[in-house]
Image (cartoon, rainbow, N blue to C red; front, top):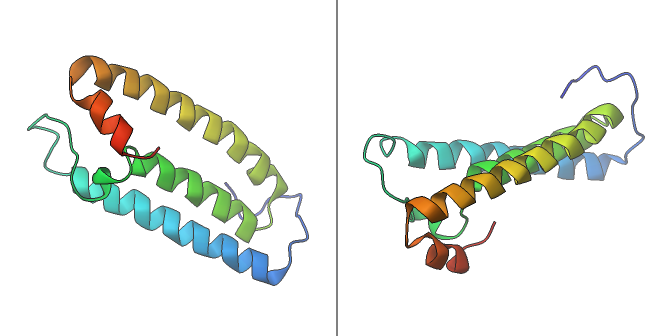
Length: 117
């Protein structure tokens, strides 16, 4: 993710501002969900309150929205292409993490049915 991407895409201004809005939403979601996690590292247990009552992986989702919005706003072709690689890795990490959580917490399968992503 770079402001000085050598290959630029010609994107209309209104779409660029939608990209900027997506970037801000992604950053907010990432930070907000990270704050919710603070203090739970030592306690253990499954976090199912707040944003985690609707979205299982809000940090991952926030980062995906963040990188898509950033590349649209900056009109960066290489950054947009590399975001496809990042997104595939994030989804893979999510799948691996959810398998571990299913083994660790019996209630995770039920939680998974009630939440998105």
